[in-house]
Length: 312
View 1 (cartoon, rainbow, N blue to C red):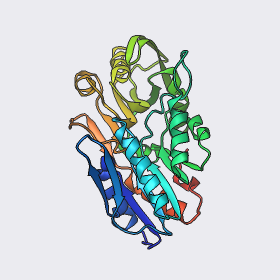
View 2: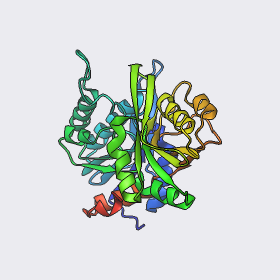
View 3: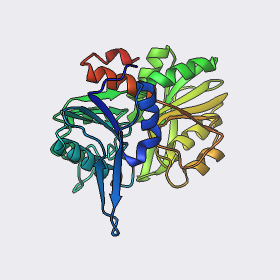
View 4: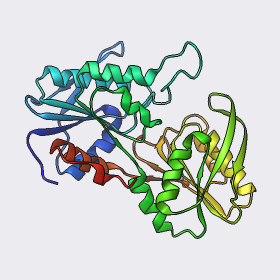
């Protein structure tokens, strides 16, 4: 891709591994930035080159800890105060997205609060991928380019050439996402219905639909503790499926997730590099979204339509 001197790409410290790949796909190098850390843990990002009058793209996923979000906010503020023309936050994984509504009394709608804070810091545009709920786009008062990992996942699924493939949603909340894959690939779909005792604790689950002798692909936006996805996979295999695998955009993989995946009936778990893996696993395959983000960054800079970047 052609490099233009009036656009600069910078990376937050947590997403440098992906930012370097995005910059390479774009055909440029990451800008120089340093982060000074004080004795008490306070930190201060600093641009080590001029950004005056430029389009600044800051690449940072906001997974835990919250310092990643705070660092992004500081970088946005620093770029605005250094007279950047436009500041775009590229957030492959948008943290706090699960808190998009009041699901019980006296809780924060954190996704809305984070969107307000980003806008207050001075961001001009957000580029993100597979939000936990599509309506989060409406929380922002700045343009949001919402990308979908289906662009990279579908090619891989087709390469497997699975006979009797069927798409499955691990819960009723993910039926819209799974249905999009099923319609695009012209495959049937089943749904797993679960009830929870509490956060990350699944009490019981049932499969709605026939999976016997089928090669099942579970579709989700993220895997956290892997309790839901592994329980669904085991249940599907118990009901006579030939195989079961999973595609999930964001590999949060907290606590016992890796152990659960290894012990489960899952043949493989396909994820993107929106979040770095904490450890390797023979069952987990990572597909990079760097080229997709580089393409959208170029189109956003040139004011071109990005709809061609979507499969569905």
